[in-house]
Amino acid sequence: SKVFTGIIGNDSRTWDSLSVKVEDVRAGLSTPVPYNKFNTTDYPDLADGNVDKMIPIAYGSIRNAPAFCVNENEAGSPATYTFKFCDTEFNNATELTAAYVEGAAVSLSGSTIDLTAGTFTLTSSQVNDQFGDVTCDFTGANITNGVDIIKDLMLNYANTNYISALWDTTETAIAQAGSRSTSLYIKDQIKLNKAIEQVCIDIDALFFAKDNGLYSIRIYDADRTPVKTIYKDEWMDEPQIDNNSDEFLTSCIIKYNKNQTEDEFYTYEETAYIDDAYAIYKSKQSKTIETGLTTEAAAILKAQTIMDRSKLVQDIVKRSVKFQHYDLEIMDFVICDPRCRVTGTEVPAVWEVIGINKDLTNFE
Picture 1 (spheres, one colour):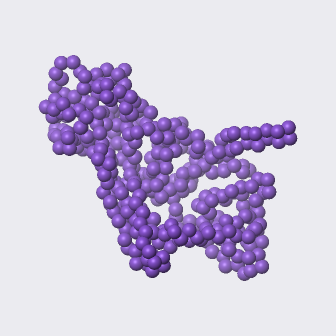
Picture 2: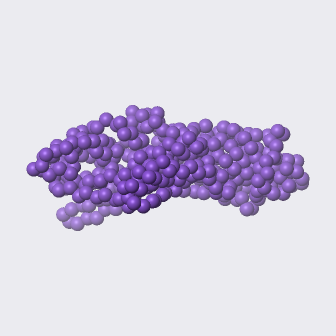
Picture 3: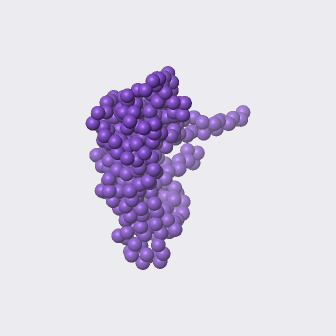
């Protein structure tokens, strides 16, 4: 069976040996997104200031995002101007709910809204020459489940179909069923793996390639069934035990429902654990996290997940095992006592695998 699947990177050679660096296949997910730009071929009346700007991609509910006029330089005195708010190469927009000029709402009752093109029109009197100050509220692609967003990004920008030859579909389906809804709006170009990372933060997920080469997504589940038992005679060395107690939190702030133009968020602060955590660590520490979440209910769930893990920092134990456990994956649960001495009495418990280093030379 496979031990690892990856991308061949640098190599070095001598007369007697060959050494290659194998990278995680996620490193290859470097396609820039979005990649479609405003241009004068598609939009001949485009203003110079909008040429080569990226056409944003959007999933879910988006608040107060910029809309770009595509016929600002149209000759004469056009009665209406057309504004494009998102890229629709792969997914149509779902709904346009509001438009604003200089922050003031304008009526869309007479507007021509084309969700297939991601555009709407405003009259010249509504625009009043304020072409750079038009924004809108809209729903982009009708895909809001975080796992489904990742699957769609992989299909569109990495040519990776959601099939069993490329994905662990069983495991990913479990994550999809447990995923919260979120949004994704990208106006300035980033790498595909960074876009996926943004979604993973929102839904507390791990997107990774398994050693067999299949992509998978896991969401933390405290009730996950352990996959193995590691016995004390299988440990190869002494444990290294770290407790990063300086990473504790007494509270956290979740930023959600972003105003895309003003770069402002609604916020939710989780303070229910301040007294309990303070009693242990004798100080207070908070963390603020920006998300694409769109509702307070989702922000509350996100905050509770963070505090469940951060109000009491657990030991991290590094220890080598025999190679029969080579097939362990990140976020697997195992039954063991990694702090036990070989001559001691085991106290087995459920532990989570949070990192793996495979030594193919020593088979550990």
